[in-house]
Length: 358
Image 1 (cartoon, rainbow, N blue to C red):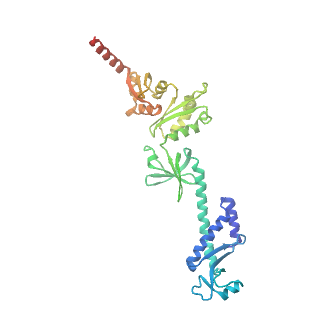
Image 2 (spheres, one colour):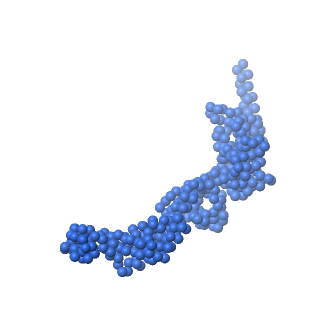
Image 3 (tube, one colour):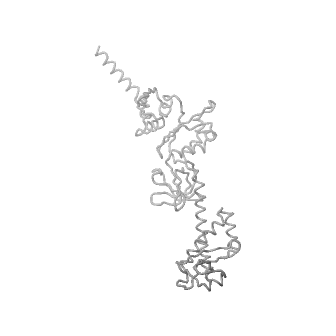
């Protein structure tokens, strides 16, 4: 190693933020191991790298004795006196033992240490950048499949889209651009492990924040989201400003805003619901696109009994109960839906029962 190497470390310190002194300390520690491996593992040695010139020297601590039994650990008193005139038997002195060909080993070791520390520093930088971005949304390029996981390249790093966070109806084609939701950032021995999702409700929330300025600015608030990824989502929105229509803001001119999100989610249907502090009104809105005639709430059991006309019943329940299921998740109420005709029939039966008793 030479002065150019030290200058390179100084430049590296500026560019990567890796301390030159920390690098040199690490190189010295690695050179001790390299020396022991190549020249004798029993020696008590130290390595010093000149911080200005880059010159490497190896030193061994030896016991001064009048009868040398192990030349790696001991030195004759007469030889020691040539180095240290005051040396006497029993003293421990430091002797330079730098091998002639040690420079090549030093250069190779230094390169390995520097490359390792650069990788560690870059991993730490990536971890620090993404550890504060959980629940954020990022755009990447699909790289490959790793078993059932999809690996996505974000430029600085790769992230994992596990099979459990994928949408079954979606195809993940290599080279395609994709938006994903950051679920978790973990620090591992191999660097940061970033897990992302396409099925999490948070993805829909972030997409609306990106597309709707009123949400980003805080004029419209997202009160809740219920989602069956790849099929349908219900999102409840609210505005304190009476002059702002929260649903209209999310839909956008000619439906442009919501349509952009639907396209990003590959055709997933989105119902934008107006949130209301009155639970019966909110539940009625949540069952959109069905039109509700009446909502009766049972506070103790948290059951909402909903009445719709006969021609709205299948719409209110939805295919395989999806519309009612999503509305229940969104509102936090168990929803029991009946048609007006069923209610009328039950009421008439009750009345007949009362008449027979009289």
